[in-house]
Length: 364
Image (cartoon, rainbow, N blue to C red; front, side, top):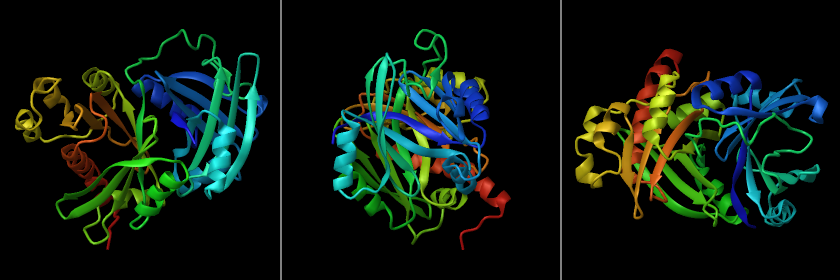
């Protein structure tokens, strides 16, 4: 199976139009297309937004028994389908089936005079679905016939401060890390490229990063340590109602400009203690981005064997305080840095500690 990259992510939402306006207003996405019953998508309304190579499909069910409506009832708005672009969706589906994957939908073709798209679906983890997809023809077409593209797509630019989906982070209950990673390795042909146990105070998590051989599709899988104090990974699992996509990380070529721009539109980012940057140069070497620019914005910096990376978590805008976005700027780095994992975890813990107290949720 040849998986090339993450083609798109489909969010199920209570109101796709409202979520589209939020993403466009805050992060500079633009609407690329729309679909619904009149375009052959029964029982749903969908809005396609994107920028750079990022495509996010937002779908609302029109009836209570639509799978988008059922997902939202369980979890609230969230990432429900991750589309993996392959060289052949039919072949990938056949290989996944032979490896023991459970089918959701067999290969189906959408085409017009400009493009041809084939997609099939398999169960992923929890109730998140993997869509195996291949494309031929015009890049401006997303799902020919089903998603009607807006006039000017391909010429009218979004912000383009975000370039592509760098990775998706998945939270699973304690004990589910190994089988979830095993599924990606055995069914999808991914390999584990990074693993880490992180302790922050009395809390602990284990994370593994799996990646397609192409390097284009990367997932971070995280489970809490049940023997330690509960933290925000436990919060996610409780508030989301089980395993799911905690965040998408968007790649940017200029994280300073991105954070400044998005903050100016009302996006709140995780707060980093000012002391974090005091010893940064001693730990990192000469940073590609001056400390004077990183410190006031709270941007974290780290490195791997290949280069540096800069990261920051946005605060969750989700009603359940579950899903959120990450921005990442890679200056040669290919994997993840151990120092940033602890710092990012601590930043999210500081953000959600107050929510936990207000909600009355405890982890006895």
